[in-house]
Image 1: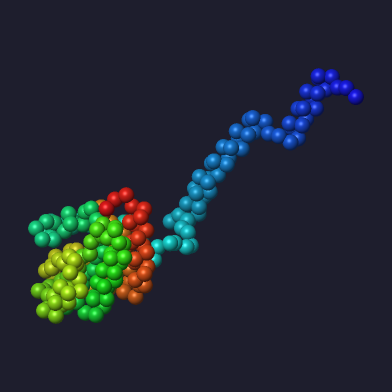
Image 2 (image 1 turned 60 degrees about the vertical axis):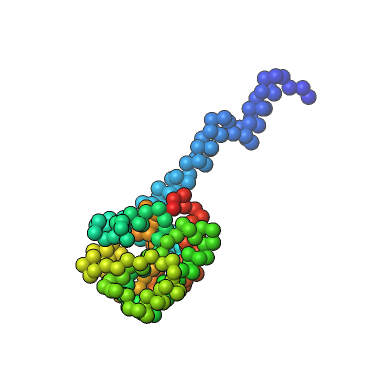
Length: 218
């Protein structure tokens, strides 16, 4: 049986309609594929006042959201420069406590040291800071720091200065002197994460490793 050209064109059109998309339909389909993730994200963001948040996060520390700029006054200094300037350019592990540095204080300083050392070639991008109120350090504490924490940076502050600094580190209304937390300050001088006293030190190590891996600053 032979078909005329008109019949062949009709059959071809039916085939295209039955099993293939027209060029216009293909364009629409591609547009939907590319726009679907954006649409889903918008819906997720607006399902509640605070937006949708994933149930599972990969960080061990608690995020400070939004990150908190440490706008410190010029009289709070590290050596001969403002402490705010010291906090620029590197990731900083911070512990705030008292000059007598009890066992909990020493434990946190040890966690900070181990987390930094474990970064290997990236450890130079990290600095550690112990800010203490009052002073001078007792001889037993200064001896401990000299032998066990030789590269630890230290800042001694009068009670008034310490109080002004501590205001930036208050979380959940817990007084900083009693919190016993380790904090992470980013290279732009923003407080962005913290760890409670009983936090697994491996979590701090892993979080810091990720920050150094993916960050283009510091």
